[in-house]
Image (cartoon, rainbow, N blue to C red; front, side, top):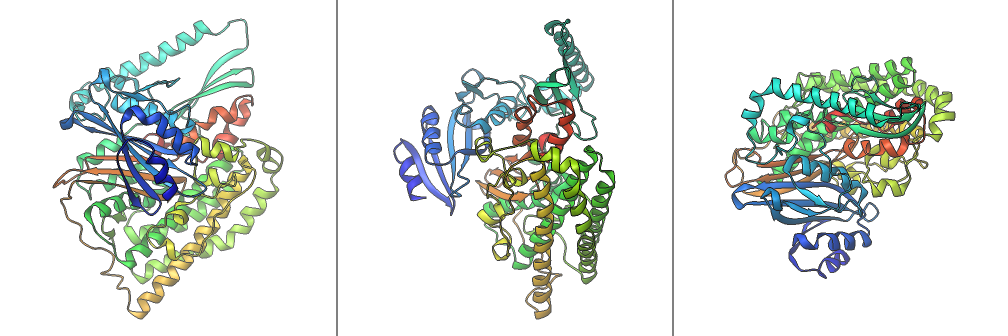
Length: 546
């Protein structure tokens, strides 16, 4: 970190400070952004997790927050700068030529806040539907109530814009060729609510332009309408396939600003619940992938395993999916012995089934002959496009927030990076399965530890689950990272003095960056490759449409 501080000291900075053991926070003048970003990249921070604007309307400024990462040394830099809020002057240099992974994040900041990025080669709106174009809904003076009164008018605009797009395609495509643009989705069973504009000539793919945001829910605005506890219902909707870990990420940010330390019991429960949630997501992801390539029996086996783990979540929280099981201060409920009995049934079910699943997908010819050659991402791709989770580890990149920046009780867990080498679609599925086995191992460790501490009297499972968090928080900001089922989730929380609710919450989730890779991986391939490659990227529409 000293070397990184030395690099930053070469520039005229407002301040440089240590934020966390692996994080440095620095504020610069916006006019120096490009040269500082270039210096950070040369120092090894070649990835950018996300870009998070905050609208300080009373100060008439937009604060830009950039989160740079070095995957190899685990160093991170939180860079801040201010730009004018007035729309005509609300602009800053694009860093997308230096950091390919910044491209869509800059488009998102433009769509939500009106920040123009000078030099960006494709600064189109993203995520929001066309009725929000030019309105910049995350600005504090946007009138949501007025917009929502015109629902019918807005729907008609979306329909007309889609028809105009199709008419334009008819004009620009050569009628004497076999070129066409296919709309893959939004209801394709292997994709969820996403539309891939597939430009093809016959069966050959010339390019893919993903269109996301079909069920955009404005989660980052919804949390500001709730108190700090009520915001959980929006945070967990980042993606129901793994709602526990997203709630943990948010709760940690609140606890940091509040200055609250949760109990050891709650830390271990967050590990236990988080890994159960990860298994729920991974089995669903594997099931969807198998369905996409026609292996329906194996898909059902995975879904059967998942039901047992959902039984445990239901016994603990009363709900199988939307559990609301984590909140600032710890975990929402205590723990009873019968709940661990349900968990034991799930573990035994997995152990009894895993060999059958492994043997089928390892022997399957689609896996051996086709998936092993499709969708290959190199380690350079992973770093350039800021990919993470299963996608990154399948290319041999050793990153995992549970290991790199341990939270909850992960610093006491025996675990290593689970990786593959080639970065193919087959490697991603293989890694997904091996991470299921890893999660089962972690659960067994956490379960044993909790049971021993309860038996010794060190844990009180009915009282130690929660500590009090003030209803009003001081002015502050925090970032919190967790290893979600699909990779890093970063929460950037901003509060004001005596706040009862978040002022700003940025939720960065991995499917956004991973969807950027669809064009790169499918260009030059054939239409039949779309389900295989897309499915292997383990994309959740929830965090795309957040």
